[in-house]
Image (cartoon, rainbow, N blue to C red; front, side, top):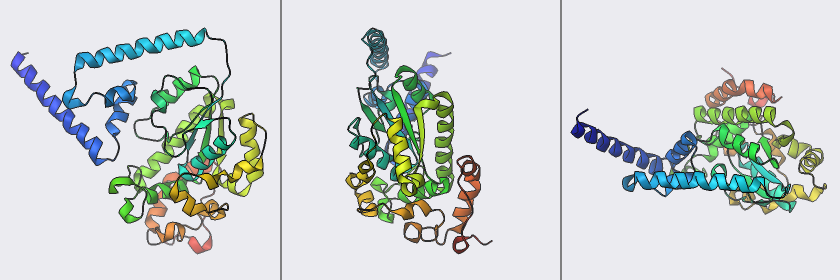
Length: 330
């Protein structure tokens, strides 16, 4: 190949990469490109962040990766020769903030885990060391998150457990659509940008991905993965909380359940108040009135959500039957 043509193509490629980088960084609220690259190449996200594409030094970048691999090998070697210590570690993931934040708050109130509750721990998949009593909350259906990221953690840390939260799949998708709207339209999405999972199609994809991941990890690590349904936590509180406590090897205390009052999320504090909001367990059934009537004139959206998520509803033993007041008429 002609050398001048080769370098000309390299320059064009670099310009394209810069444009892609800017698109993912500034248009989609968070750096989706970072998630894709780190997931695809299985390298720590911080290496991507620290090397902006417009200033990237390939040799320095490769050296950083080699150093990272070297440190990881040394760490694995050392930890295998340390006296065995069975430190509990926990990941809470699954169906949205209404359940994951509440579960994380319960686990934090047990005083057994050092939790990052207010925000998702997006650095979790790339952390080499999980400290003793590590607790984390992460939406594993995020773009770029791959099965191998969590599988590697589960295989390396025998004390790592997962609480996988669920609520009615259609209600979960509804929540993603409403809360993913720009803040000027009443949603929680920052910078007035539509969240990536806030459309009918993308919310269905996100819910399906979460269920698929759960199914895999439950089959591979059955004793280390616990499914908790929001509806059970609300309507069958004592038995569900006892199941959580048994899973975490901690004494039962009903006061853990009321820890939702301490949630750091201001939107949740407004929604929940001081008492358990039992209407959360029937959002799907009351879709016309849910979220201040957001879906009242969007019955086609509800129908598409039901059609797209019926299989998962059956797998999780959720009914897709609507009451007479909320039935969708053709």
